[in-house]
Length: 370
View 1 (cartoon, one colour):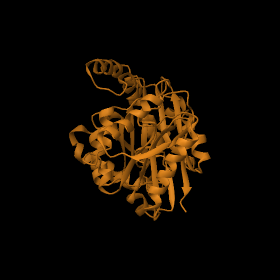
View 2: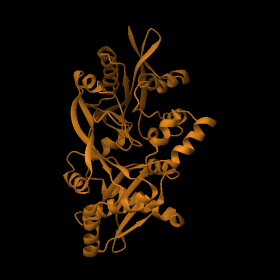
View 3: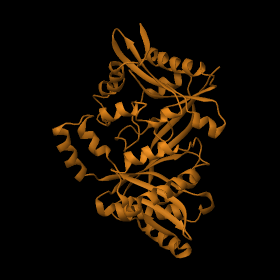
View 4: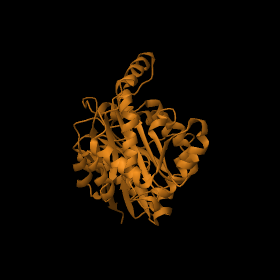
């Protein structure tokens, strides 16, 4: 008999975190998260998500063996931003068993119904600003940093349990050892016509630039489906986590007549490093990580946005151009642009014009709560 148990102890949290290590042990594409970082993420003392919303982790147990897991959580910031009444789920993992999946989804459904929600949405780990979406296409390669991976059978588990598509998101792949000619040509024409200023993060004026990025972020994404502005605490927390990992030359700020107009963040694909660490930090994995870091060949354009009044002026193309310009000399000749909402036709056209091709699809699901 399957029991779905609320995670309340350190032992149960460890079971929750370690389940994927068993489920993916034969999946060469899976990238293990650092176990210590996972523990911090689920600790309200370290994750500012808990300052405004509530979350409960669950494990599915059969004969003292963990066979699945899920989170059920609220997101008061989402409902406030969109005037919605959504509840959420995330961190779903399960053996290829319909009874396990049903028990987990039923638990997330009940938990959110008890809180008066009318829709169950996910997977979101915990928010759209974290890892989001179920991989439904493109299982043959490892995910890039901060992107998800799961087995193909999950789609059937979701949809057989009443989940329906809410939105698809695409990842685009590019493999160029020199700046594509069309990108170079387009960038030169745009620069000549508009004279936009594109600069990278200034380490000597870090506080100023971080405040500028936050200003752009709160304006540039506000019309996107599912967008939820980070609280200042969440933004500061994200900056604190990412700052040691980013390359300042790949953090780009666009200015028009001296005013902030857009922002782009590309990151070295640290999943190439995490893959050799296998979730653990010890003397051996640290040495492996240092060696792997020197050999990183890929980067992910994590986020890119242009304030509405400055859109359609080619700033996004300039961001791609400068990402190539500064990334290629560092050896980052493979790149992923992700994710792009299926209704963001402008960004899809730009990505394809730049020679990138869609190669992975992620899906957010909804289920009505009655």
